[in-house]
Length: 186
Image 1 (cartoon, one colour):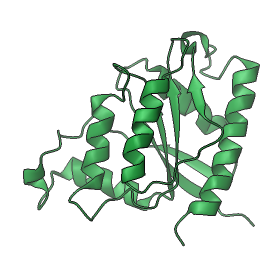
Image 2 (tube, rainbow, N blue to C red):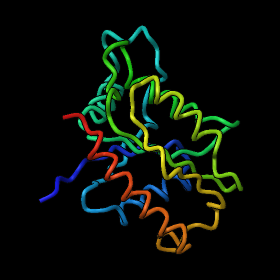
Image 3 (cartoon, helix red, strand yellow):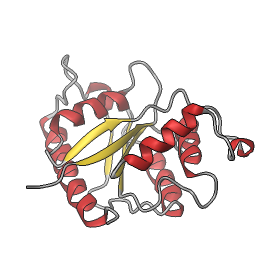
């Protein structure tokens, strides 16, 4: 019997009709049984301020606890100005502080960038990976996931309408499931 791993899914967009959130919801439907994808909300987090390290506001404590309770993390993000959105960077900072008490430490991760543009958020994907290296998050290297043309990606039911993209995402999730099993802290 295989273990089901709880994956904290961090969506880097707060927009009501976010393509990134739509992808996260679609991936929940096609994930292998070994992964349970749970979206962890970041929109209610306060701006990180080192002054609250000794006693963080409740939303920050709750978020950090959700990350600590997860077996792995999956980031799904748009690209803003060739980087990750500020709200995503803020969430990363909140769960990594105070120094030496990071909730991210050692958790296997993966990054998917989603964009209506042709290059699929390449800059955000790599900028996020740079931060994850420092946080000691072993990130899935291959396959890389840059999802372009996302404005036409979903059908009316919210599923991935493009067969080749859906197949790729299923293979990505299978690879991620194997990555998680190889890298989950014991």
